[in-house]
Image: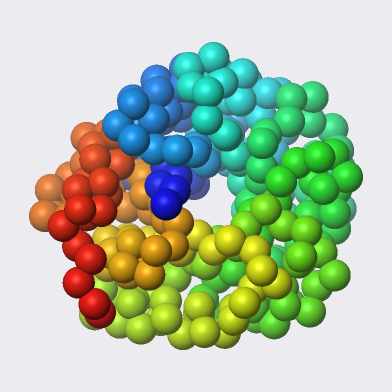
Length: 243
């Protein structure tokens, strides 16, 4: 079972002082999270003003710094908010001078297949982001690229802890065999911990980090990504009850 750490996401300093924004801070946070037990890193490279970006300079800086600190796979986002124009997003991917091990592609976004194709052409693994509440499932299952992705990110966008697990089960049911690709299940904000527990019970890979949630299972503010990883690992031995 894999626990991936998602270091920052689109969050900034206003969300939490613990969110790493510079390449050095990303590297330090990644190293601590991997030492705590994370098996992979997912990061959003940032512009000098702290915004998500796909620029080759920012991607190279983030990847170089993180890889100097850890030896696990490192992936990045290709979210449309970082580059709204689909053609420009593909151009960005093709201009990267340092390549990530994998990159997430949100399948409901315009131009997703073209972005995924550009990544595959460059030898970069694709994490197919399938968000609940979108048409991503249908688009993914119909895609000729689906059997070639590294894994499926089943992403529960329902933030309600009371309903998130049911939403997660519905998303997994809709994905079915997912073209035989491994599935990583995770939630966000109020759903992060309930969905993580569901993933563990089902024996699926999952992720945790300041991108997805700012608090620990007991509601205290997290002081680091490493603290969130430790909180996730605590569930692996104590939370295997049927749900």
